[in-house]
Length: 322
Ligand SMILES: [Zn+2]
Image (cartoon, rainbow, N blue to C red):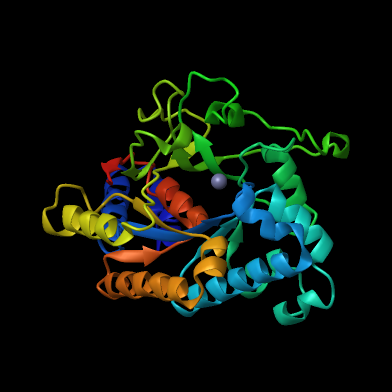
């Protein structure tokens, strides 16, 4: 619908047509759910991920990822798999023809993207000699485009060694794979946090952040787009209920804007917790599905959330989401 609207008769340089175009655009947002929900998973580099040291451990994690991704597909959900280097280095060793038999003979990254329609973005704590560009480079080695989304970053910090997002205003270059000649350019920031997640300010919506010191001030000419970090795992239902109430019941927030929320999941949690954890995820999916059927929430990739926001004129929105 938005694509059709961008083709409205605004090229006539006629005010009436321009106004009609604006009205049509507002109508389109009124008729489309304002809340965009995405599933995101991270793997990390700490000892909980020692599974990635052995082939049998890798396969346990791999099977957990496949179980999650197939479950999400059954609900029409959009899932972003955001790996760090430990998973990717293990995948280089263990994505063998025998191990790829249950993913249509494709490596797991290609299977997620090509066969299930999910997404793969880099996520990096910039540990162990690897930075974001190394992680993007590793993803590219599996025949998958790493895209332009930063899967986790620090909003602001007095410690310059932190992954402060402003460095992504320019292309970044690998450390570990510096001889590759690879560079990675980001465009979108997802998962902003503070060091150790202390005192975090969870919000829903999209902006172009001004600076590390002034992250939540929208700067229309900023060259990076940030999605709010409304992504509380165990409290997802409460956060989602609150968003729905604020927008559709109390009308505190305009339903003409775009609000984002993420359901965050971990393959490590599934390996340790087994079917109970998958059931917890499915309970969330059912809850979300009910809102989808009411037309209040839509499953969307992070990419679609961003492109719809751009097509709608980049109206900044930052609704508290705690
Ligand atoms: Zn992480």
